[in-house]
Length: 336
Image (tube, one colour):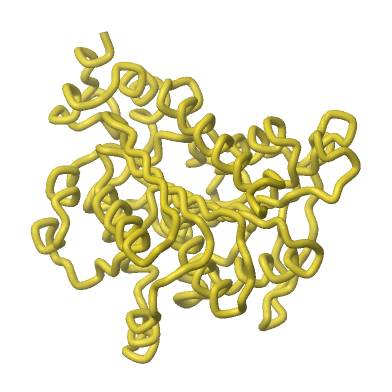
């Protein structure tokens, strides 16, 4: 059984023993087969990750750039920087939307604002396209520390504005750091009076943690409970925070002072064995109190970011859930 198969001392990145009885069997089996053998990338230098990132890619990373109906385009940020958006176009012979126009789902990948790219969420992007027959765009936004706080979100916002100029049935979503960018885009869309059909925030990082020196400093129990969790623990989170914190007081003030209220519906998915669990749920509840239609589903006994681990049941459940929510959001009845 997976829960009895602890590889501690045999591999570079074993599952912490305290989580063996707290995790689903199929996750433990997946972790031991695919992840326990990988190095802890937050212990590597940024230079090494940029030079040899392919060596440390997660097992779910896929490059579909040569697949049918997949095309890369270049978009320009407000500062003139050109970045890539990978477009997963539907087959018009299979899509219920025929030759279009197509609803658009814009994805922002995770990776702690420091890692990641167009391969990390590729399987999810492709699955959404296939199931719903819509256009999915994955955004290759700029990363830290080479780029300052907020630059990645600037790229994401430029992509959303470009799509909005082409049509108005837009949904957005992201996992982890991508969820944080998604929340930022919601605020910018609100200020621009731009309607969004749905925002999907999966395991979002939505509170400033730079002032916390240890897990117990955080005002959230999930950081204490899951400080040694697989895939994202306290040590790894602090690595990302060090690379993405606001660089000066002016940036921090702007970050802290933005009002939080949205027009677009929100679907949020925390996982129970994730340090980010409580901040994501608290964020969703706060928006619900402000009148936003919010749906929250908690996935038990799996960690951050379980949804990429396609063989496990909770990952399959996640994909069913987000496709169901998106399907309802893009239905003509959703605007009536």
